[in-house]
Image 1 (cartoon, rainbow over the protein chains, first blue to last red):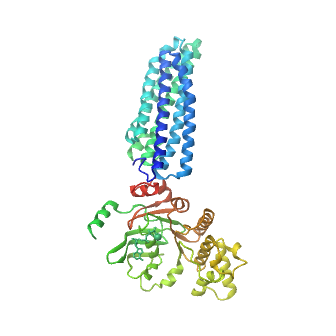
Image 2: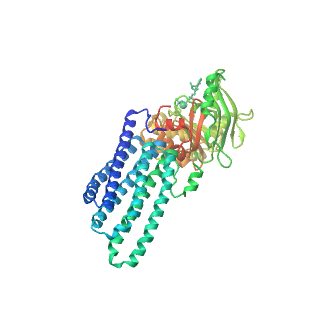
Image 3: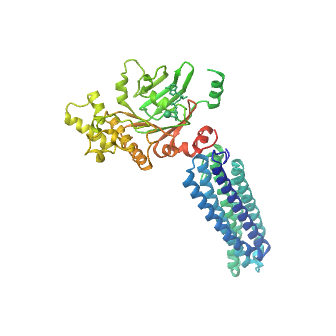
Length: 232
Length: 275
Ligand SMILES: Nc1ncnc2c1ncn2[C@@H]1O[C@H](COP(=O)(O)OP(=O)(O)OP(=O)(O)O)[C@@H](O)[C@H]1O
Ligand SMILES: [Mg+2]
């Protein structure tokens, strides 16, 4: 089922426009996260500043998209797939906006950590987390663009890998905290960055779950992976 | 059955969703076919239950057979020349098409409200009193007064009409006339009320009043309503049935039909897509 094909071409255009806006917001947020992680991993402060600037744009897009959704709901009274689609747009932009916020957080810590050589010790692990989260985000946006619910389920599962890496890093960081009390502050900053990256993965996973909802009309949030696979 | 029909039956398959209800239904259609003459079949193999104290909305494109099926439920089709109904229709487990059923009594139990309000050219009082008099539902005039008052009150029309009961029913506004017809229908204490596009000629406020009335009535009656308004079906019905070219494509809880219908044809129709 396609989001177009309404008898009203104007309605089709409205929905197409909405979809394009969500996708461009997705691209912006993807850029934000990518810049923030580069800033963190390579100490590029100029990128960190760019992330903060983009945030205004992302917030404005969220507001505009929400408003357009409200107008379409009021004027078109969507049902079935159209209702699920709009409902999902509203949810997706919330998650995108949060990813933007997490990226901003990472960028801020990146600036602060850029002069700190101690924190280098954790970069391998952070880099691994970033690469999983980046793949999840890019794939989830792709899934949303193509309404590919099969792929969405696969991406959902990548989240477990990210969570595991986060756990590993946390264990490592706790030992450091105990052993190296002089560097508590920067160690904590690394923890917060790791936490932010892990959250990006959660938001990407949410987006995938909404895709399954649009396509199948079923809410798979809060069901463990196995049972959700069994009945789709 | 010609080739077109066979192809169509394959495309439409059997009704999806949940045609049956839990427990004993108030009414039940089983494999109903309706023909207007030898070669015009209007309803094909429709099976569906009407649950007690629920509203069933019947939706679908013009000419798909909604009114035809609705009329089967109180044998209004008997009055149409050449119309043949086959299959079984039950009211409280009793086959309404057997010879020992009196259609006039049946229509008191299964009342009908039409798209265009059709008050008799009589006083408001006599419009409502007509049925109870016909069926001898009262023993004296004060009992009849009570029935008239109660019916008009239930139909939400008492306050507006109590001081003009002897004025003609045709002098009321469209929305008031429709409520008068509803009062007339419930005056004979039916079990089921059939409504064929009851608000299509009314403004939003009058429509809301009738919808509110239907909501109140369903605690005592079972209601089937044909409507062309998707929003109305979504607002008022417990279950919703989608008809297409004489077939019952899908019937299910209204919540399901309007958020996640099973059949593509249902989805196309309720979302305004090309079928
Ligand atoms: N009295 C009749 N004689 C012959 N054919 C009829 C008669 N009444 C209805 N039909 C035919 O039966 C089919 C179903 O008609 P019906 O009135 O039940 O449709 P409907 O779904 O109620 O449409 P609408 O939404 O326009 O009221 C149509 O093809 C119609 O032409
Ligand atoms: Mg009709």
